[in-house]
Image (cartoon, helix red, strand yellow):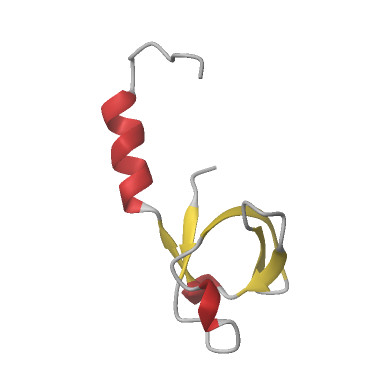
Length: 68
Protein backbone atom coordinates (compact mmCIF):
# COMPACT_ATOMS: atom_id res chain seq x y z
CA UNK A 1 0.00 0.00 0.00
CA UNK A 2 1.39 3.42 -0.85
CA UNK A 3 2.53 5.82 1.81
CA UNK A 4 0.26 8.67 2.77
CA UNK A 5 0.93 12.06 4.38
CA UNK A 6 -0.90 13.47 7.36
CA UNK A 7 -2.63 16.79 6.77
CA UNK A 8 -5.04 19.07 8.61
CA UNK A 9 -4.49 17.61 12.06
CA UNK A 10 -5.37 20.08 14.81
CA UNK A 11 -4.55 18.32 18.10
CA UNK A 12 -1.35 16.84 16.67
CA UNK A 13 -0.44 19.58 14.19
CA UNK A 14 3.23 18.66 14.74
CA UNK A 15 2.57 15.51 12.70
CA UNK A 16 1.18 17.29 9.60
CA UNK A 17 3.32 16.49 6.57
CA UNK A 18 4.70 13.28 8.09
CA UNK A 19 4.55 10.02 6.14
CA UNK A 20 2.43 7.18 7.50
CA UNK A 21 1.54 3.67 6.44
CA UNK A 22 -2.12 2.62 6.45
CA UNK A 23 -2.94 -0.39 8.59
CA UNK A 24 -6.69 -0.83 8.97
CA UNK A 25 -9.96 1.06 8.48
CA UNK A 26 -12.54 0.79 11.27
CA UNK A 27 -15.41 2.95 12.42
CA UNK A 28 -14.67 5.64 9.86
CA UNK A 29 -11.00 6.11 10.78
CA UNK A 30 -7.68 4.79 9.52
CA UNK A 31 -5.21 3.18 11.88
CA UNK A 32 -1.84 4.46 10.70
CA UNK A 33 1.76 4.08 11.81
CA UNK A 34 4.64 6.53 11.50
CA UNK A 35 8.17 5.33 10.66
CA UNK A 36 9.16 5.63 14.34
CA UNK A 37 6.39 3.17 15.30
CA UNK A 38 3.96 5.77 16.66
CA UNK A 39 0.40 4.74 15.79
CA UNK A 40 -2.78 6.79 15.70
CA UNK A 41 -6.29 6.83 14.26
CA UNK A 42 -7.20 9.54 11.75
CA UNK A 43 -10.10 10.51 9.54
CA UNK A 44 -9.70 9.92 5.79
CA UNK A 45 -9.79 13.71 5.32
CA UNK A 46 -6.51 13.91 7.26
CA UNK A 47 -4.64 11.81 4.70
CA UNK A 48 -3.28 12.66 1.28
CA UNK A 49 -1.23 10.55 -1.12
CA UNK A 50 2.51 10.99 -0.97
CA UNK A 51 2.88 12.36 -4.51
CA UNK A 52 6.66 12.73 -4.24
CA UNK A 53 7.11 9.11 -3.21
CA UNK A 54 4.77 7.94 -5.95
CA UNK A 55 6.77 9.86 -8.56
CA UNK A 56 10.04 8.36 -7.34
CA UNK A 57 8.54 4.86 -7.44
CA UNK A 58 7.36 5.40 -11.01
CA UNK A 59 10.76 6.72 -12.09
CA UNK A 60 12.56 3.75 -10.53
CA UNK A 61 10.18 1.16 -11.97
CA UNK A 62 12.00 -1.50 -13.87
CA UNK A 63 15.41 -0.38 -12.70
CA UNK A 64 17.54 -2.85 -10.77
CA UNK A 65 17.57 -2.35 -7.02
CA UNK A 66 20.97 -1.85 -5.41
CA UNK A 67 21.79 -2.98 -1.92
CA UNK A 68 22.97 -0.30 0.54
